[in-house]
Structure formats: structure tokens, C-alpha cells
Image (cartoon, rainbow, N blue to C red; front, side, top):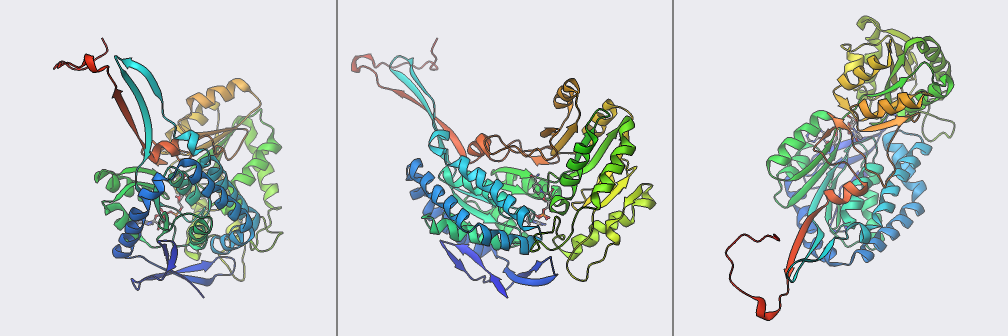
Length: 494
Ligand code: NAD
């Protein structure tokens, strides 16, 4: 049995609180590990280590900080198979999907290598008599990331790479359901030459999160998870004056126009709805079939579901793995069981498939879903795709815009004018045109709108550098010795 403690001050340390949780292996339902839940004192110990190390790290020139991240990247590549294996075992996703999880995180580390350029300031020569102005960006100090179970490599890397590149020390509180990869990232960072204390991993539950929220030395918190917790962390963190960005849940729509390529749209819908068993914040969970396309599209999607091989991530033939816990699987299947009673039509009932072990459920497709049904209103976060039928494009846009979430959306059409209108009118942060999961590449930034993001600061890309630094502007005057005189007026350049 694996025992996960914490990674503090450059080494793995045992948990001291006496409280632990179980880490399951969803492919067979066994308990793979126990994970320690940190007390306030243990979180404080991590902060003290981070504080002690941060000043020295910030003073290292940015080229050398980037070189440590380069080595970190090399080692992540070296350990790719091991990391993917841990990830697939604890999360349940397939090995190929686990490698994608790692790769999308790696791309943000690659972007962070540009930190010498990204932190450059501006300079104005001669803004007044003998006066020059220049700006600089400085790290915040000790910052924290609180991350969800569904991307245990990618989301920690999205947060820690820009933060550390900019000269901060980082406290990571990963999900208690799959802490194995985050713990390895702490070790790999030190192996890459990262100073002890710059990347700390504190495992735990609400107690650890509350300790982070209340700690006076933590300057900023980046959270990713469900909307109620995002709201809680944003409210409590900002109340104590911290800089906070909180990414919440999602209900992502894929609008399919009557002129769309139905085969391409159906392939995209199946991939985006059932990939990672629907446990992606950018998964498509609602197809909006506009006008006459609906019957053909539902038929095309349901016929493709037969080809989705559901099985353990360790089997190379598997296309979709289990859900993260038995409890979550039961919650997901309850939506399918209740669909007919809500007035929807079950086209494919994946919940009726049975496995001898593990937290599996099959792919479900539910037609004639409407707002007001729990199937539509709730984030299900499983392999359940709903179809809403709308008569027109305008109805489809109104439906998406009325949804409280605004993470991702996709439009499938062959008409450029329709696409252009859609991009402008839709109140969602990330838009795909004939692309079902429009997660921006690492040199843009990622972020939803409405209940999918509290705060206005997206993750990674240029916004990531802004979030983990603060600007300073220096007004510098080197006058001729004879020019000095008293002037009580307000300084201006008039
Ligand atoms: P979650 O909200 O349950 O947990 C996220 C983190 O918050 C974990 O580290 C957890 O330990 C902590 N936490 C849980 N309950 C808490 C509480 N009561 N008080 C303080 N901290 C608490 O989310 P999850 O189930 O791990 O992840 C799935 C959710 O994350 C989905 O809603 C999904 O849409 C969302 N998500 C959003 C994005 C995005 O970019 N918007 C990305 C990935 C996942």
C-alpha cells in the first residue's frame, strides 16, 4: 500500500495530523494508497519553507530559472511512462489520455521558459526634465494552487510553471483523489535543480484549503474545481486581500447547424463527450441540433457509440476508462435513470452495462433534453451526452447565452458568416469553430466566463505571467546639479 505524505522543503515528509483518505484505483475498485490530510500546522510548515526559499529564487536571474525548468521538462519526458501509469491508475483515464494530460501541462512549462522575455518591462527616456520612467514586474512571494482530480498533471503544471518561472515559491494542494503525479512533480523539480522549498505539495481536504485561505504569507491563490467551491474560495480569499482566480464547473454546448458535415460533427461529439469518460471541464455535454439536422445527427452519434471500447486504462484497446469513484459513478448513472421521468428520451443507456469490477459506466445519449431538467441544468461530469433541439440559430445562441456556465462552446457549420456572428454573440470564454474542445494553446490563455470563472484572470499564457507578478513603475530623475529647486505644485509634464 502506498502512503502519500507531503513534499515540503525539498523532501517527502510523513503526514502528522493522523487524518488520511483513501486513493482508489478506479479500473478495479481497489484502494491503491492512503493520502495524509494536512493540518494547519503542516500547511504553515510548507509556507515557512517556501518563504525562506523565495527571496533567493527571485534573485536568481530569469535565464537560470528558465534553465531549471528546461531540465524539469527533460525529466518529465524521461519519466513520461511512469507518470502516465500513476495517472491512469489513480484517475482511471487511458494511458493515451494520461499522456495527453501530461503533454498539455508540458506545453505551459515550455511557454514559461520564455520568462526572461515575458517579465521585461518598458522604458521611456526623457519623460520630463532629466526624468526617465521604467516598469518592471516582480514576483508576489509565496503563492498557492488548489487543483481538481480530473487533470492531475496538466492543471498543477498550468499553475506552478508560470508562478515559479516568475520567481515565486509555490504551495500545491492537489486533489486528494489522485495525489501521485503531483507528488512526483515535486520530486522531479528538485531533481532538476529546483531549490528545496520553491515547490511544495501539501495533501489534504478542506482543512488544508482553509489554512491556505487564511495564511497571511500566501499572496495569491489559483483554484480549479467545481463552481460552489470556486465561489467559496474566491469569496474567502479576496476578503483577506489575496489575489484569487477560481475556475469553476461547466456545461459546454456544441451547436450543429443544418449545413454542417454531419459525420465530422458526430465524430467530434462522440470524442468530446466521452473522452476521459466526460470528466473534462471542456467536455461537450450538450449537443444543440439546429433545425432539420437533429434526426440524422442523433442517429450518427448513437451508431458511433457502439464503437467506443470501455475498459481499463492499462488495456491499449480501451478508449474510455472508468469514473474516478464509485460514488461519482452512481451520481452519474442516476441522471440516466431519471431521464425518462424528466421527459427526455434515452437513446443509448450506458448505465445498463455491467462490469465485474471497477467504477465503470458506458456512454449514454439522451435526446429531447430541455432547460429545467436536471439533466440539462446540472454539470454531470460523466459520459452522458444530452441533445437539445432548437428550430433556429438564434434560439441556439439564446440557449447557450442563458446558461449560467460559460467555459467552452463549439459551432459546427460550413458557413463563415454564421461562424463569425457566433464568435461575436456567444457569452462563453473559449469558442471552437468546427473544433469540439477549444482549449487554447499555451501561448494564449485559458478561461471561461460567468460561473466558470470567478475573478477576471485567465490561466497560463501572458495572463499567467500577469497573475503571478505585480507591476512596479520607477520614475527616476538625475538632474543637472544646478537645476534643483523647491516646487510644492503637483508634478506634471504640462
Ligand atoms: P472539487 O471542487 O470537488 O475539488 C477541487 C479542489 O477543491 C480539490 O483540491 C479539493 O480538495 C478541494 N475541495 C473540495 N471540497 C472543498 C471544500 N468544501 N472546501 C475547500 N476545498 C475543497 O472538484 P473536483 O471534483 O476535484 O473536479 C471536478 C470539477 O472541477 C468539475 O466541476 C469541473 O468542471 C471543474 N474543473 C474546471 C476547470 C476549469 O478550467 N473551469 C478545469 C478542470 C476541472
